[in-house]
Length: 237
Ligand SMILES: *[C@@H]1O[C@H](CO)[C@@H](O)[C@H](O)[C@H]1NC(C)=O
Image (spheres, rainbow, N blue to C red):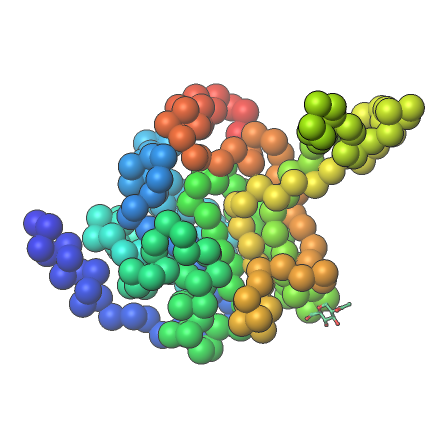
């Protein structure tokens, strides 16, 4: 069985795409924190399959899973995604996502815009991905990414004291008169090829798509996984 799987991942041809926009999911086997994280399930569906389905529902036809692991490759095949054989170098736990993205772009010269989808954000909505694609298609931006809005009053540690970062002690903002702050959720990043080739997902010409706080839940630990399953059984997300 295992040998067959290894065969699948090594022999399965790299699909060369010429589309303008390609969706990529980087899913390495050696995840930290949660074992084979991308294959863990939320609501009975693996994180990987959820992400592929959401991408499809958003109208993205070409969805590629870049992986170094045979079981992840098999799961990707099962949901009809393309498989990209991720190298040892880009699947190490110190490799930044930009390496995995550049490796994919290098083999797919026709791709002009990349959407990096993170399988660790199980509640991303298809409509949010679609908004991001629509924004990049207006040709007004180089990049789009997902954020959530917070109203946290933040403090920085300064030796023995703490001082406010994003507000004035004399004028504590009231929620209704403050737009809050945007925090990256990590759910998706859309960027033009030229920006990625310069080594970045973002520049000063980005726009954002907002997600709710619950939709932004990221799976980093077994606790997150439990919470995600509770949420998926509720009607909150
Ligand atoms: C932002 O990106 C778009 C698309 O690449 C480009 O046409 C526009 O000139 C850029 N604007 C700025 C201020 O760089």
